[in-house]
Image (cartoon, rainbow, N blue to C red; front, side, top):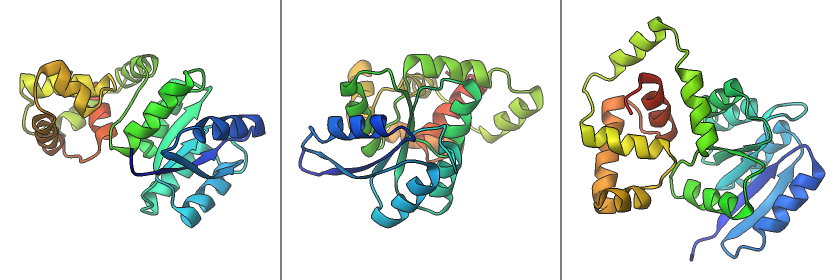
Length: 219
């Protein structure tokens, strides 16, 4: 890879910050610009150094990861948020993704998968571990009928079977290239199909499209 991906690490545990920094700095295309011990420091660092990616813990003092993520997005900062946490609480997952996190990972995943997730997120993909996707399904399936009806109205044009298939693979965390290989289509075709899906769902965000798909059971 020719381009370098700049990263900030936000975690209240010093050992975790240092460990992640050491792991990432072994990769030639990853550059750690700094670390933060809480959400407030994470936000200030994103404002200052404008990293491509921030690895964001959820439970932190002064300001938690969900609030920091929301502020990063509301201020229009281009940093993509990857939540990396030991917590797999259903509500926290949904809150973090709604706040603008692109990817939600648990800290027990192998380091090579974390590195792959950073690269995928940088390239605009969304990766959800299977256990996280399952929890999302469980969380959104409890949505009230009123909320469900409201969200259904947003999907004014129904998805085709192929579009539903692509959206289901997106929900599994596959990137465009992987979806193309799975469906024996070109990556360009997949990109065009995803653009159409976004238009029908009324969003231009991959994570939100996946959430809508799970909520409306389009997949």
